[in-house]
Length: 453
View 1 (cartoon, one colour):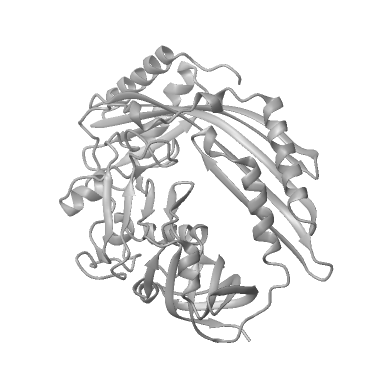
View 2 (cartoon, rainbow, N blue to C red):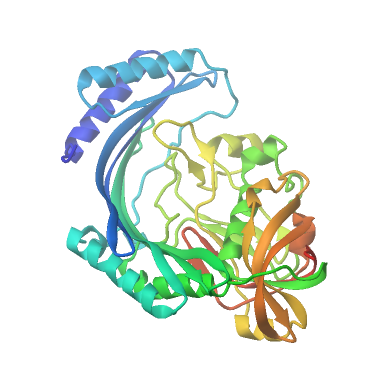
């Protein structure tokens, strides 16, 4: 498919589907239409490995009964007989589902916020020739950055745009459109005895934030610095965690504040509001209204305006993240954090997560550590127990001795409890960096046991 329906056609057929649903006896319904296009190319040692362009369009309809039953169906055939069949399947699924409390539709307004800058014309104007040029530059930059680079396993560029239309039987009716692009480099390095593969990638809604040469150089730097890694002695250490690794940890913590996880007893943050869950230098917030960022939007998947929610303030847990259903259950207002696709019912998820930065540079923080680890990778974060907080994960990085980085470290394990870990944070760096929809600075954590040799 290379041509999309006009906006008028999409709006007409969506309203027609809502009318069909109401004729089926439901108390409410919503329709989510999505369309988009994306292109990408990757080179392996300068030769094309993959070159793709894709177009997609689809629609989902959710029906709701007055007793809280709901059903959904979706498809990508947009002719009227197919759409009628989708409504019928949604009604069938609705009638055969279990009733739930708090199922409702938002009754406000959809108001697009142009100041959020979700689309960059420079991204949508990128040509196939430019994509190839970007990948060639990344390849050349990586190969020339260090003599130990054996191969540029991948130099990749991807870009695309997407547009959604959402409407409900309560009168919501609105479009939102955005674009994004990403680039990444993976290299293989060798020192003659050891071989290491690593990489680096970035994504953004803004073309001018994608520095392809810097991306290649950082991929090389991370990979070369890991060559010849070996374990350090087992014991308690101070660890300095670089921002990208902190961001992956923050993603795990953000999930613990989602209301469904709280209600289902799957989060260690249950009943923790108003109590200390981290050190006083930790402030974590969810913000769906930061211009240009990946998790930004005018409204969430239920049409509720996105907002700003303080999750942890100076170490104290302050709020959970809500959609309409769970906000009703807790007697609060939705935080605008509903998420869903065309084929799924509304759930709760973070928008943009930000861990507040401190005032010191990462170099200054490292210089004060007598014996520690500069942590650049944690492996197995998905194994953290969300209820107890216990974890044991693999780690890689560089040894810190008397304030200086001395050698690469690998083959070590960090075992701790997430709550204890958060309370042992003693400083945050000034280097706040976004990785997708998560922003984090360097962190310093004291008294962490590292199992090595």
